[in-house]
Image (cartoon, rainbow, N blue to C red; front, side):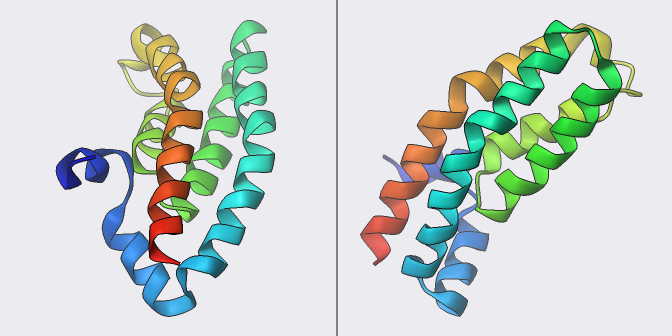
Length: 121
């Protein structure tokens, strides 16, 4: 994958800093933990959407944003960032699209992250 494309998916700058500071192997362990928790995170987002529970959806998006950001998952972090702000004018019209993007890309982006880190170990 081209570096520019990978940079739209992963926060390469942060990942390089993490790898320098703690090592790719240690970061990969955090990513594996995130991978175990991700179905719950995404499930909570979908459940809140299906229940039309905007407050919970925004709250869960905030949690997911932080978790995704902590392991360098830039694209899904950005969608969660948008999703958490229910007070924004565009939220009502766009939130379903943002959630769909998270659901679509979460596993794919996580796989890219793992491959990236495994190449650094």
